[in-house]
Image (cartoon, rainbow, N blue to C red; front, top):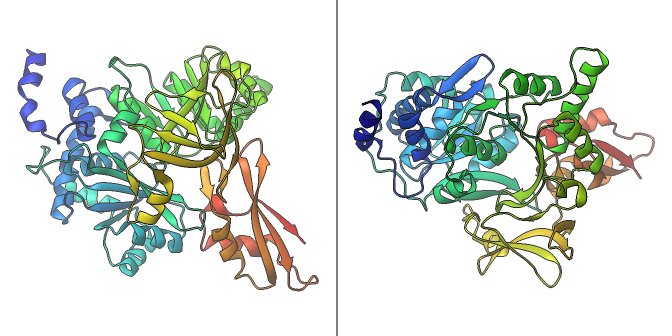
Length: 483
């Protein structure tokens, strides 16, 4: 009778047409309402609770004037509280636009202005109201939004949901000139990118270390939720915290950029040294890396730390999703390669060797930027800006870049943007920002400075202070050279 009751109750879950994200939450709530959807620390949110909170939050957002097609900028740290907002926006067909919680006000304002939002939702921070006022947009603190939602009914609002081709998310990425580009992803694309296949039985808990403004976090989350599995959030990329989360939840999957894997391995080595653990994570069945080259020495360390896991290395982008993968024995057989095309991805090299991607997982364009969209998309092919080589077995290796961008720890940095900030520092006559190879970060941001007076060189503290007010932390130079 319980199953039949769920089947007969389908009518109230009208969430849109076709492949829409709202159905991910509604379907899981129907099927496994008591199963944990997400965990952070001691708090757990079940699929039933998440769907009910999303319905309440949808009513609250509608009451604030948010409608289908509107963009809502979310300036929030990783928390369980942002999950109902994400689900609610998907339900009513509004667009989720996350920005990093560590952004200085100037950069947050630039992104918010570019998004042309109806509403700014932020953690309780002093800067949010000022940014919202300068942009000319309504603002609400996340705790206040949830307080309003608590008084709303836990049922889907009677409004038309989105169609599968409607925009679902916008993720900002750096352009080569420093102008932010908003990558628009539709409901259909986000469903297809994260679909686990026909197997809906639990595949196991996954620990997510990516921040919730990053596409990687939501890709992992939606993969878990489409499979009706549990996501464990670790908001700080501290090795010991990640190790503890994997063990506490018997997690079967962990995905980290190389820099974070280094921290995990360091924590495991320390416990062996202190005789407080065996230095392994035997519950892991998949140990994933990507976004920058994962050197063989690091892969060997991961293999020893996760003896029961299949190693996988992924290459992709916000615009194209997961483009290639390298897994199993190929990880060591093809060092330096990023693998073979992933499902639904069609790859080609243009005459100059630039990698181009085509398929149903591509983004819909850059928000409100037809020139950038036209430059990136040609006859259905996305030009990645990466130069590539293929071997005689069809395995791909990234060999260079056509665009003036630095890729560090999974983030893109435009040298021109950093140069513009450093050029305002007194005592600097000329400055150039470059990326230098790094086995941990892929590349590190470096500044080459010509001082106006060799006897009065601006030091690292001066440069750091200048950057803190205008640039996100990952854009700050890690090394400085004087010429």
